[in-house]
View 1 (cartoon, rainbow, N blue to C red):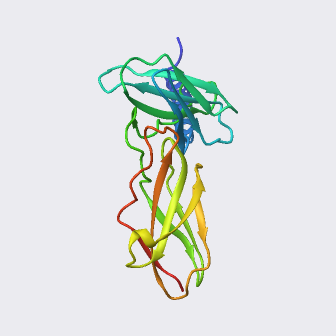
View 2: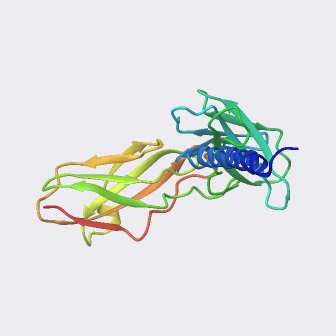
Length: 221
C-alpha cells in the first residue's frame, strides 16, 4: 500500500504540472498579438482579397468571414511571410463581415484574437478615415497622421488657415498605406489651421469619400 503522504505528494506534483501547462498556454495566447492594419485589395462578386501588415514571428495569417445572416464563420489561412489572403467562391450576397488574426505557432490555440469586425458592402460609399491627429508641429510645419481605411488607393489631405472656404484650401495627395501620414511645410508661424482628409477608393464604383468631420484644428508655434 502506498503511504498517504506519498499519494498527496504525487497529486500535488500532477496538479502543479497541470497548472504550469495551463498558465503557459494562457500566457502564449495573451502574447499572440494580431495585425494592427488590414486593407481590402479587391472585393467583387467572385472574391475578397485582404492584405495585412507583416508581423515578426507570425506563423500564419488567418481570416474569417460570414454574411450578416449566417450563424457560421468560414475560415481561411495563409502561411507567413505571405500576408495576403484570398477568399474565393463568394455567395450572391453583397454584404460580408470580415475579421483578421494570426497564428503565432503551429498550435491551434496559439492564436491572436480576431480584429474588430469590418462589414463590407459591395458598391458602398468610399469610407473616410475614422481618426486623424497631429503627430508634431513647429513654427512652419506639421506632421499629420490618420487611420487607414479599407479599399483606399490614395488619400487627399486638405489644409488651410482657419475659417476659409473649403474651396480655397490647399491639398496634398498621399498614397494609401498601413500607416498613412504627411508633413505639411511652409506654414505660417503662430497661426490657426484646419485640416481634413478624404479617401479615394480602388473600386471606381465607390468613388471618393466625404471630407472627414469635424475638421481638425491646430496652431503653429
